Length: 292
Ligand SMILES: Nc1nc2c(ncn2[C@@H]2O[C@H](COP(=O)(O)OP(=O)(O)OP(=O)(O)O)[C@@H](O)[C@H]2O)c(=O)[nH]1
Ligand SMILES: [Zn+2]
Image (cartoon, rainbow, N blue to C red; front, side):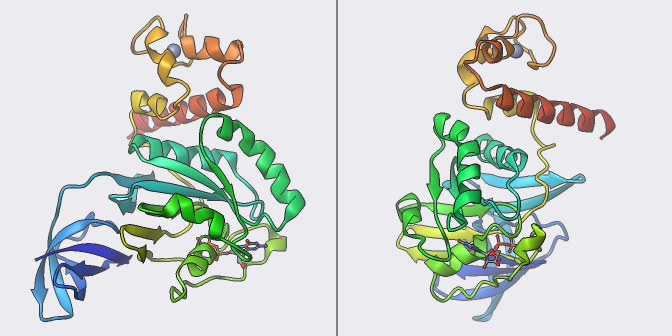
């Protein structure tokens, strides 16, 4: 029997089977590699349980790699909602890492600016996001506490996954969109400006026919060491038309002479901030490969 993984908690999986039943499943292998959103083949054990025997081919797999461990976020998604907020503090670096992860899996990212009810702080973040709007990333301002309806057009017909640091309001967004989700929303101390890890499982919710939303645990880091340098550069869409113009076709866009990407940054066609983000990530990947 086949089915779709709709929840992952630790080493247990909830599978929505094609016979209409939800079964609690396990996988034999310790490192199973099963992600929320995966299509799987299941051997049913009665009506409520089962054993996952095989992961069916994926459209994509969103994951991060921290400290040499891969953390699967979700599979077979068509949209990544990168949630940012003025509290806990906005991290442009984490935003870029999320955008790169989505682009490297060929999924369109949308930036959700939550907590716009914190008017002044949100306006400051909005200014920092102008660069990303210019690059073509939609920026959707919402207040999950007041009204999430601006998000709906971006969800319709998609399998979307919410990613972002702890405390930006992912669970609150889910609760507003899915009346019976009861996802745990933690009252973090916003004054402390630090998110607390509250969501420990990944879960897929049906919002309507062909429209699903996946909530993933918040992250403090977003390791990308699984990427190769060319894939990293290609995940910066504004670099793409320039990549064939560098003198060396294996240019890393670091110190190489006649680098078209660096030249474009000098002339203001590419943002110096984005080039710096790319170069920091590139150096990190190179260092990891050296010590791996
Ligand atoms: N002011 C304001 N606070 C919000 C808004 N949305 C969420 N919060 C608050 O932000 C805190 C964190 O919200 P969560 O929904 O738990 O955040 P999360 O991103 O799911 O966090 P993790 O589960 O740790 O990943 C809670 O105290 C929420 O009440 C909003 O629109 N405005
Ligand atoms: Zn170059």
